[in-house]
Image 1: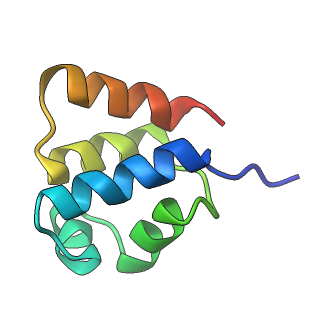
Image 2: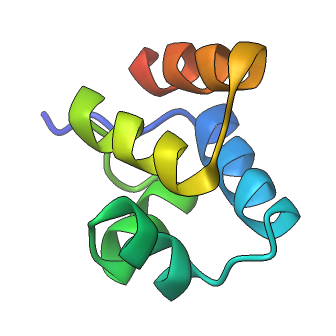
Length: 77
């Protein structure tokens, strides 16, 4: 059975992206992934792995508690 990402992480991801003023494509470029992956993570259709979560946090320029919270939520399935 394929696990999906939790909706809480998906909405957090989309919220942080919009807050940063980034399109899905711009975030994908910054996070070294595809726009399709960003879309899938934001719609909770596929889980995100730890390396991708770190790259996404980097692309979003998350720091401190926001980064830690983002990473913890990305690990919840």
